Image (tube, rainbow, N blue to C red; front, top):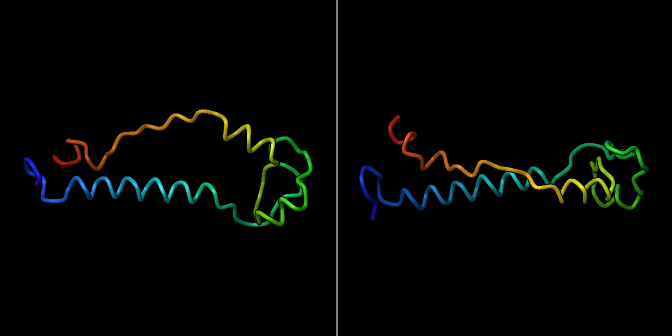
Length: 89
């Protein structure tokens, strides 16, 4: 049951769209492309051959990836599709 001017199923569509956007963002972040580098793009340390073969297109060594993944990244968390401003336009 939708309330106000929203059509039936609008909330479900917003949730599904948010989930799809997040999954696409995560997939794009995880999939390296292109040729692997022989040395890390950040610290210039050699990247082991086994890592380069396992992840084609890898650009960072394991230590730099762990450091980057450990950092807190602030994301807005605002659902533009569900904001009242977007419904008024």
